[in-house]
Length: 153
Image 1 (cartoon, one colour):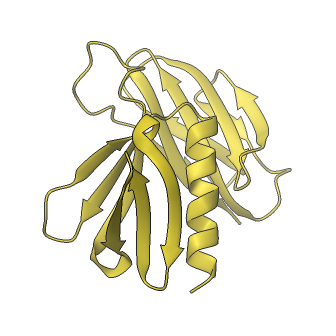
Image 2 (cartoon, one colour; image 1 turned 180 degrees about the horizontal axis):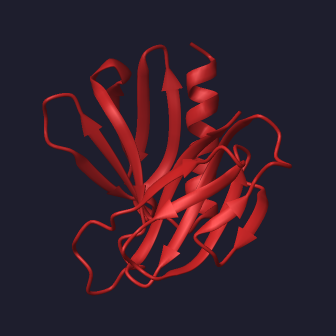
């Protein structure tokens, strides 16, 4: 169970580095809850609970009830309220391929620690030189920013 809090702490750090400003907790069968990062004073884990200290009070969330945690940049995409359609995969040539109807301004690959390891402005990027592992691809389009996780085998 110690691995989950460590992994979530890394994800929170990565989200902050990537200029995300809102934490969204998606619950199993219940509405999601949005919390601006500016209101979060402390995040801790106690057994099977995630504890968020917000404005002097502590909210407790049972990890089994959380379907997913999402990070958003709600202020960075002005005037756009739709979903940015992006499909990402690694092809047989060892390239990341990004499919989207939107103009791609930049692709940035980060390792799990948040370190930038690759950069491109094309819809394809060679990642053969990367070690096997999980990476995050930041896709910047004219409609906004999408972060996608991918696995390099």
